[in-house]
Amino acid sequence: MKTVISIPDQVFEAAETLAHRLGVSRSELYAKAVEAFIKQHRNQGVTARLNDVYSSESNSLDDECYKLQQLSLDREDW
Image 1: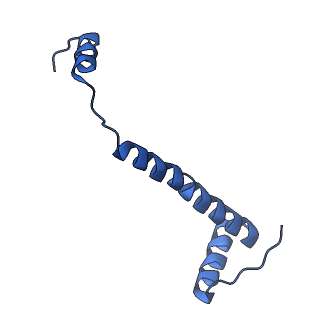
Image 2: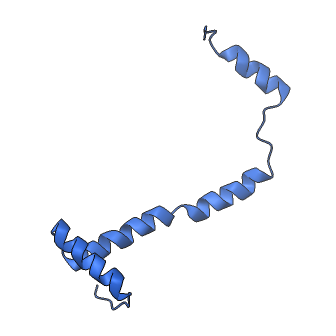
Image 3: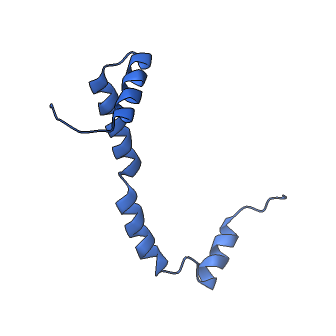
């Protein structure tokens, strides 16, 4: 898909230089950059929602579960 965007001249020149150095087209460079940006930010909403849920929940085991968990572990010398 073709699209038109406006970017600062300095960013454009840096992108042109990088694309040339990498031996890729301008389109490929921009597509890869946008894809990386999307991947970087993809789970931000999920993480924020999980943080909200778990901030109101206790993260410790009750005493009985804690004792059972300890019993299930092998004894090792550290």
